[in-house]
Image (cartoon, rainbow over all chains, first blue to last red; front, side):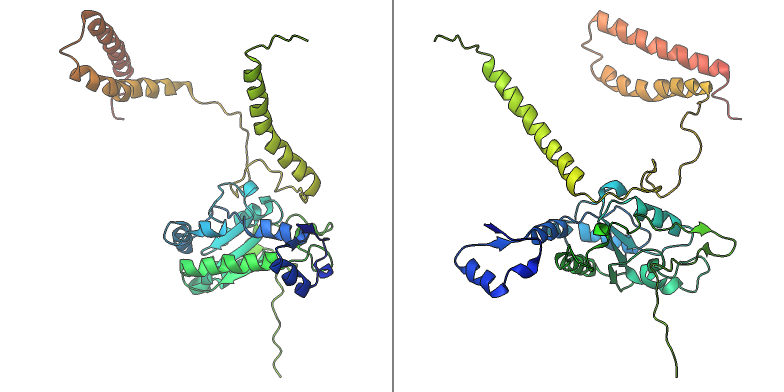
Amino acid sequence: MAEGSADMEMIDEGLRSELQKQGIYTTSLQELYNWGRANSVWPLTFGLACCAIEMIAASMARFDLARFGAEVFRPSPRQADLMIVAGTVTKKMAPLVVRLYNQMPEPKYVIAMGACAISGGPFKQGYNVLKGIDRYLPVDVSIPGCPPRPEALIHAIMTLQEKILNQKLTGPDRPRHLVAGAPSEFPVPAYGEHDLEPPSNPDVWQPPIMTRK
Amino acid sequence: METSQNPYLVVVLLMAVAVAFALGPLAAAWAWARVFSPKKPGRDKNAIYECGLESKGDAWISFRSEYYLYAIIFLVFDVETIFLLPFAVSFGGLPVGTFLAMVIFLLLLVEGLVWAWRKGVLTWK
């Protein structure tokens, strides 16, 4: 086995497949690192509402999340690297969710599961419901549905794995945890008089502005 | 050169290998974490409690000493029941010494019940 450099561009794809046919497998540190990360995504044991039931079903024998190395639901954020926001995030719960995310070690990912975690869902008009966890946390994969089926969660995990596998460890697009200056924690919102303060984190939440002509 | 081999040398060797087998992965994990893990400490991450809530107050709180009465009642009505069933099942074939020991045990618990009764714990207030 030949070791390539961290930069994947060094190996020509055609040469790689030719070598593979001859029984010589080449890899790079980046590929190994991403392969390891993608196949050991440990979610946080953390459910907020009915989507959590689907999440539990996905981890059980019928849907068997273990096939993706993601069955080890950790009861502590210190050991988890994936936060599945499964359910309605109330404004009372939002600071706790952000704090839990802050306590997870890098690299970490977020899956927003279900309409509620994405946008507030059917409770969007509610005075006490956060209109999407992406206002405070960088969401990697969103799963629509109310609630999404376990297959949808499995698809989201596979999408996340694909995302991890395609990450470059060097250059401007490298993951956040490898950027030395990137902040380690996101500001935890406080309970204000009428709403959470701040109502969103402008560093994370940049909704597109629609201009009508 | 003649060397008399200690028969326990194999055991010592096995122990050394076992310890290395246990400590090796730990050391490897520690070294990996030291070299490669991105260190991003922060206020929340270094916090003690990991339930989403912020911890408040002191861990050194005192419990009321009156709780010993609950312990006595628990022994009388819960632990005693566990012992009573096997006692009843094997009652016919028990030697005298065992019987006496069991009766003393029961009497001790009954004494606790009398104590709790006189303290007024059994009266609903």
